[in-house]
Length: 315
DNA sequence: AAAAGGGCCAACCGCAAAGCA
DNA sequence: CTGCTTTGCGGTTGGCCCTTT
Image (cartoon, rainbow, N blue to C red; front, side):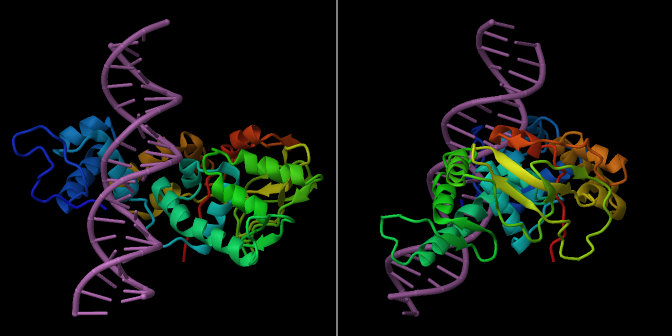
């Protein structure tokens, strides 16, 4: 972390127009927070200027998104979040912003740090402990249990872990697909919020489900798997949980209209019009039915955007 | 008790895409 | 169409802090 610069050695004081860098002081946070609450988000360089901050707009944006936003969820990641991150990362690769978009209250930076510091290490450990004599000769891939997360082969895990340059880990998916000559479902994700079951090769989006009857946060069960031709197959109906997004929930509960307004701005700007639709339709996503047989990776990526944004309460 | 090492995480950097004149 | 500005993203850095030696 960079030192806060209370004396302003790096900043514009001293007669120059040099912008401040490094850690944000509480005063700067206050200024930015007050400005954002009163004026909402505009052009970030204007925000920096009008809020009286000697920071570049970029720095203000980052500070707001990663730290000051009222809808941020602080604290450790829950096991459900961990699981979801791993699962999404296996599909999306290092597309942290897209992963973060499905974890309300979490930032891409947070998830990225969490992945690099914790999960990556854990996956590596799982790999090494599961193969005590794994010198450099990898022969038969074995299944590795990631602490109850999912069961993948060593090759798969290594590909996922090491192939961080691949934007979508497509090479690892291809590797899995090649190895799996037939549809081979991955184990269902416990506590996941978009789960799949039913007719192989197709899924429907069922909407308007009420509550998770089991109370474990899981709305149905099913499998996502890889097809021998390198495509991704879905086995099942996609059950979408009732979407009481942070946005909608806070709209109902908060008495602070200003904060509510800000939240709406943030979420609407992040999610385009999807959340507005959700809210207008009584907190349930009433998106069009999705049908498909086999997905190529890029198609899957596309269709991930049509998934509702996940929301669950931690603790 | 002090030094070394490693983990964590806030923030910066560079690049690409989008928007606009 | 072109060039400039702004925004957004992912990778990387650097410093605090905790643990180990």
